[in-house]
Figure 1: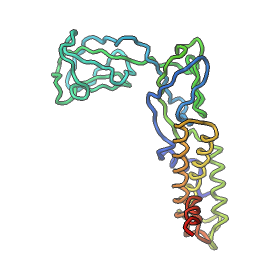
Figure 2 (figure 1 turned 180 degrees about the horizontal axis):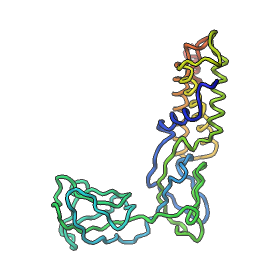
Figure 3 (figure 1 turned 45 degrees about the vertical axis):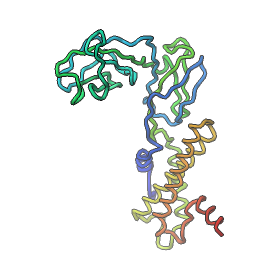
Figure 4 (figure 1 turned 180 degrees about the vertical axis):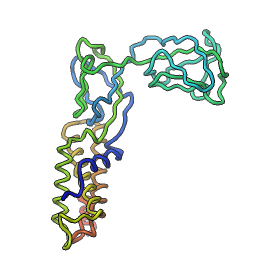
Length: 281
């Protein structure tokens, strides 16, 4: 029998800080059809939003009436953070303060009064802001979700040499199923080779299931660290490599601690532990 499965391993990976995350407004310059490397190499398919800021001057929304604390829709979504100006008249006699007098939902393009602010209920305000142009995959750009490579398409909506701002998420679901399957097989083989008398492949103790899951995750994290180190060369990729390595070590130690009562002899905790022990001899 198998002590763990792909669904269980993925669930645990998706709860980890490294395997799941969101990135907003990562800045890159796109020249010709040369690819740029995003800071992550495990992009969730369809999660990206590639934007440019094409306005030379702020967009004038004009007047809006803000009632209660209800959201009021602006003409555009994907507002540039920090670019909103709200005044009490078109001459900008009084400029209101964001977060104190009003609140903005940048992504959806909504605005409302802030509790305790200086904008009265039903007051008329005048609004200016910048907003992003959101571009279309396979028309304006291409993206490789596995490698994290982003490429401009000639003739699309992104100018040559244009600065893009990229939002995306990373998730364990982008880790290949084949890698997860191989890690489970390797983890369970290692456990079987160390089982104490009275336990075998048919044992169904919860500790064996938990330990197998943890050890498989450790193997996956180590594989991801090696993959990023071999393919990407930047400060950000070094940081990602170190995060995967640290998580691999954490899960490896956790796994052998969980499994220790089922093993014929104490498990070796980690390569790091072995080195430290040798140094103190």
